[in-house]
Image (cartoon, rainbow, N blue to C red; front, side):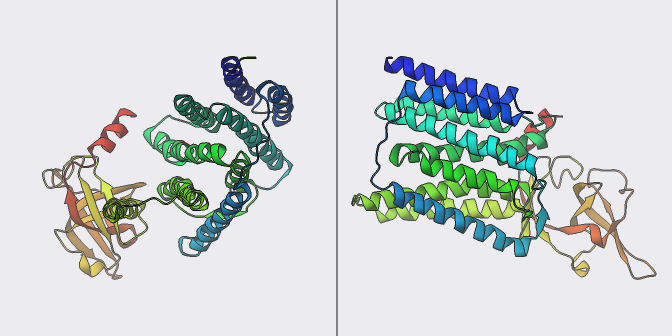
Length: 372
């Protein structure tokens, strides 16, 4: 069979394999049988080149160390962020789901990736094509049961599934070229499979979880790349000025992550209404300082508080101290004609507005409105 025919055959087989995954989603054992037959049929056609990679064991060991460090750090951070119970309960069903959806799928996918990347490693455009192909297949297999009925669910899927898959596949493709498929299979089994077995997980919000899932494969890729270059004793002269140029965007990125995550004293909030116009317009981003010190809140303060499952930003027009010494705030939007029909309790207070950035949040508002 010619190379071009093998290429087409490989792509068709992968598509058929994931189609089988979709059609047999409720029957993991049937999917397992399809995978076994599929793999036994595919390897003789493409040919399994048992190539020995010089640094395979060293880089595999580095991947294991990075993964262990990852779990140590995130579970240690759970002491500060708290933990929540995992939605999975260990049972025969979850073990079967892990065996089919993670173990078998990872092995087949990464062996196929290895076969294709090794055969066409000298054709850059083909490698890029395979990269986008595997990203697409990976995304489709992960969002089978996702719901896109509103903007929040779409944003959550993009942050928690699609973006991590994009960066993970960069790592997988690099390792397939340099050291084969073993590291990729190990990474997938551990990073995608541990949720089927652990009883508790750190209580991160979706945004913080997304950042971690994106940064981790990039960090591993950087470490392995440096290690591979050092092993080959490649000496590259680097301009120290270029290193310094990375400091500014890195600090800016860390600042943005900290502000949006909501875990720190200050956090960023995008305004989606005109109730505070002209002081605050729709699409403005506010920097909110968290506080529970009621004495710092006075009439005229622009208060951020929880109400009916949402964060509201309105001006304090009156501070009310009741007979039992409990404190409430009467609020009103600058654009509104009347005061809010809800008194804000101290438990509902989030913080005070400290800074306004004009119109920077408009893209987020437009996307949100397009899904309503």
